[in-house]
Length: 267
Image (tube, rainbow, N blue to C red; front, side, top):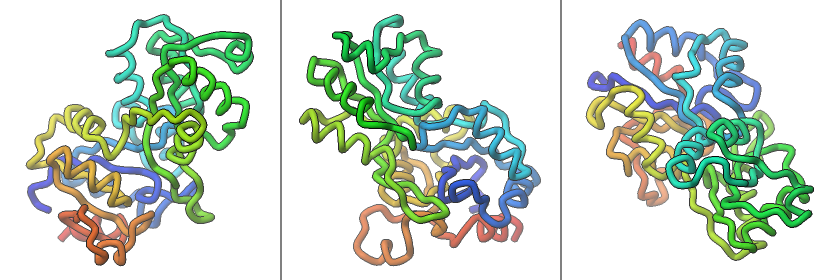
């Protein structure tokens, strides 16, 4: 891995599980600084703002800046800003990270009551939210049936937690798709857009940039699609057995956890 100068790091399942940091997390980041390796934290999780991730890592004794955090909510915000007229009504099925990313780009967020009162929207965007309820899902579905575009932050059906795999954004998208018959336009991994934007943030090239993630079908597949090197970590979703079952998304490197990467970088 001597040619790798830039890392795009997934977070859930790589740096932590839920509110539990992975062992050796602070040492891993200290090693990146010592070796002069640049990084950006790119996650499909759209529930938090970049500042919330900065604060979370600070609780784990790791210092990063907001500029080093790039969520699928931010990528989705950039996407809709380029394609829709600012000031239009929209509806968000998602947590504060997604709501903030859409609102700060100048769109008007409808409430459930406004939708039920006859309001319309140019698009409905959905992402992960532990507190999503039936009324929000129903309002989003009603708007899509009226003609609103359907956009999703990412397709992850599950996400890793300290309790095991829990339903993710992809499960919420599946609910709305089942209710409307409309397939969403998905912005996050494994689409190449978020990887290309992250690499641009780093000033990197495909030759000296690698994606570090825990999912073959998103992190590794997306990294391959973007033409960058890929590193699979076995501390999250995908496991060694998944590599042995003819999976088409084969990483360039496989490590058990970030401790193993730290050891490799120091060798």
